[in-house]
Length: 211
Image (cartoon, rainbow, N blue to C red; front, top):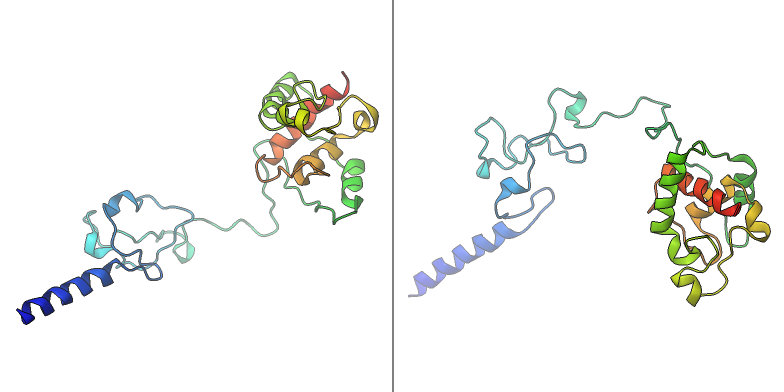
């Protein structure tokens, strides 16, 4: 009886140990073929050719978890960009490098307002896309006509109208910078809205400034 209990404890210990994850080992997985892709994935880099051999179902010479491109330098799945190159969007828009201001400062906002111009033309297509994006991200506070009377703006008063006062005269660079980093009670939207979409929203806001 004692012998049987020891055997059961030993089996249970081995089973529990096999479930633990360590480093690149995810532990026991149910249906591992659902987790590990056959194609090369840019953000996955497992260079141990034996990784996943115990669940291999591909009938090849490497383990199922192995995911490195043997035809690329250093087995990399994604090439490094050429030195001194800068990523652009499909429309040629460059990354935004101007930083956010520190508390109490408007230096970089003023710089963006004076030096940035919208790289997207004021075409019907661009403005139409900007309208859709505005209704998605800006309407709750700024309202459909940019009067600061959206559902949130009605509760938290003080959202300025785009066609009145100083706001009616701010530049496209100013609008873009504020969308990116926020200002006052407005939170930043740089992580939610792409650079190109921010410029589209700025184009649409420009039409609201003129109403």
